[in-house]
Structures are given as structure tokens and as C-alpha cells.
Image 1 (tube, rainbow, N blue to C red):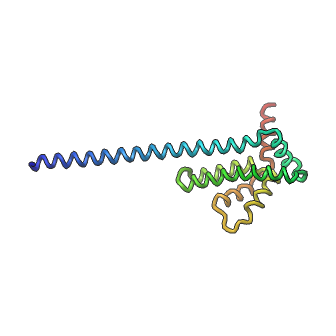
Image 2: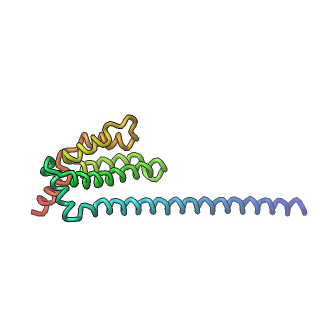
Image 3: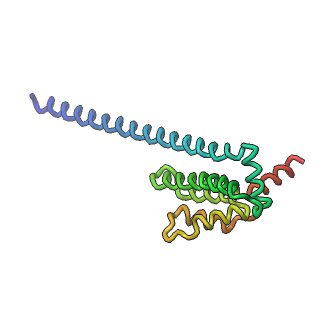
Length: 171
């Protein structure tokens, strides 16, 4: 084979290799995008599962009671609320896992925790639950620290304030 032909074959081989690498990079990028979409879908489904709990008439009464008359809660009602708040905080742990894996920015994680802390833990019972559940951890994960910090700054009201605000908006 002549030198000229060999040079053209080498150039063709290099171009084929570069093209193959570009194709692999595109497939990895597409796979990453698909994974992000699946994770976001999973998170939304989990939030709907947590929120669907509130949609039962009986649980809505228990949740309202925890806001309006927390001293009147029975042990059975407390057990329901415990599972509910664990479901909410499990979502925070999921967000933290996504953040560690690079699928969610740390800033977005903290903002998500702060917003949801205000909504779900903006009443004395929920705040006390969170502090009792997470406050005595000797080495809490960063998301737990962010959560505990967020609930310290939450104005009282949470769901009740959201409800009252909506009522004012429609009057």
C-alpha cells in the first residue's frame, strides 16, 4: 500500500473513531436526560401519594385537628400523622439522593425543602414532630440540617395560612 493510501486510511480511521465517540457521547447524554425525566416523574408520583393521603375526609379531619386542637389528638390519629410526615420527609431524602447523584442542584434542594417546610410544617404540632423526630440525631445528613433550619424560620400557619390566603384571594 502506498504512503498516500495509508495516510487516507488512517485519516478515515480517525474520523470513524471520532464519529463513534460522538455517537456514544450523544447516547450517554440522551440516557442521562431520560434518567432525569424518570426521577422527576417518580418524585411527582410520590408527592401525589403523600398528598392523596390528605384527600381522605377522615385524614383531612385529623390533619385539621393537629393544626387547630393538637392536644386533642388520639394515639391512633398521631400514628396517622406520623406516617404522613414520614412520607413528606422521605421526599426530602429522595431530593437529597438526587442532588448527590447530580440530578438536582444543591440550591434547588434547599429551596424545595424550605418551601415544603413552610407548607407542611408550619404549625406547632408538625414542627414539634420534626424536631422530636430529627432533632436529636448526632450526625444528621445535610438535608436534615437544611430541613431543621428551615422549620425554625417558618412562620406559624403553613397549610392554614395557605387556605386563609386563598379565601382572601377569592373574596
